[in-house]
Length: 106
Ligand SMILES: [Zn+2]
Image (cartoon, rainbow, N blue to C red):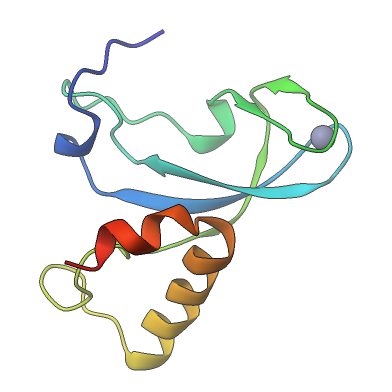
């Protein structure tokens, strides 16, 4: 496993909707394009995730949707989004990552 001491310093995390290759259930993960400090890009389909439906652990998940990076930050600085796009991803974040909401309100 990759050493990752400063996960949020690498690249902003995206929300990724993944489809399980075993049971076809979908779930959301937060992950970054470049999860380590050394900047190697790993395809999301090559990363190991755990399916919440069938508990399958491993790679091979299909990527259905990828949010823009850093939707948990301000939408305007580095990654401009329209109001509609921001509302769309904010809703997904609030639905699938409700614990993020309080942290983000500063
Ligand atoms: Zn599954």
